[in-house]
Length: 154
Image: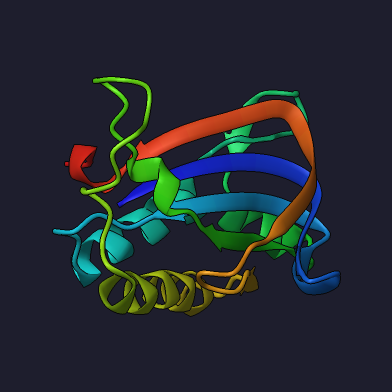
């Protein structure tokens, strides 16, 4: 499971002009599910996202996690957007190959399980619409953008 995590001041995702998910502050998470991902990958990734210390403390150092930030500001949360293109293999030719991405019937439950795990940690989490053409708006804070792969965690 791969994720692009962005620290944001605000974010929203809309489908056909209607906002389907939004947050006031926190993390925008683009989530890609691979063919061999399991619930364990979603659990590890959710834990990592919630505990990444990428928010500034009073000294301006990135030392606060989303969990800690939420304890101070109940509005801080996550917005998860499914994005199979994170699994693109562009090593050959000019057209990316998406064969490593999970099929929708496998990816959807794992995407939803990831959001459940974030909520299970006490954080607000909204999402987009799986397989929909979405428009994402956000204000990146920093900018801070982190790439995560569940296979790289110990």
